[in-house]
Image: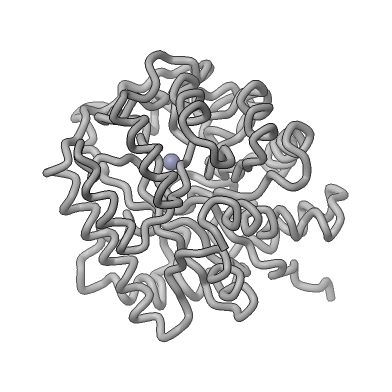
Length: 359
Ligand code: ZN
């Protein structure tokens, strides 16, 4: 009998959209979806346990209405493509949604009976990993819910917010994100506004991690200039392997290495595949190529995972969070030793969290 693929080391993950999926579900069904699952989506507590998911960043994300008559999935199935970004959303419209998602995250902790903990320090995450408790970091993907006076940032910080991207790709008062284009370069125009720079400074004072994923090249440089924290992209891939605007160029990777930051590898097939398509039938080769490239540019201490579970199509070799053991097996078969696998799974994220959130 062949042994089961390894459920350890636990994987700590840079990005998921479970809160969006739960927010879209009927309120009375959310506890069951979280605690038991319904076999759909990528994440629930039983499948996290089965896959050896140690926890990760849970994104608060305010969705835009899909414009009528536009099928983004069909466009992304057939590169080249260049998707129009949705209209900005103002704080009064974004805040109720962001508050609802923060509330869902808090409720997930309460109903989990000790199986899930919302963490605000690296030590808390480390303690969860040691005890087999799933660890959550509250992340905001796009700062629409923070108004121009930044007051709401302090409120969300007190709720547990410890990571923030000034933009999802849609523009905000804080800056411009990178549009979804393939093939394309992330250097797409203006970066952060003065308000965006003030937001990055305020995050530094509060020790909130500033996420570089979804920023364009100029915005990335603006964060690097304004902040002295390690440069971190929670869910991105390598542009040298797949020429999506959402992926990091070698110039950006060199800056991340120099500033001792890290990159969480995104599992979204449209950012992994060298041909830019979306199909899930990609085997392990593209994932391993991105990892080899990221490790080559960043070193073994600055690469981890940022799955985009519940927010993107992922490779059929993984399928959902319960498929993480197959990923560990693929890494070992590729020749990565156990020390490197442990760093990729959680060691590097812990190191980055210590440097950004504090111990
Ligand atoms: Zn994202």
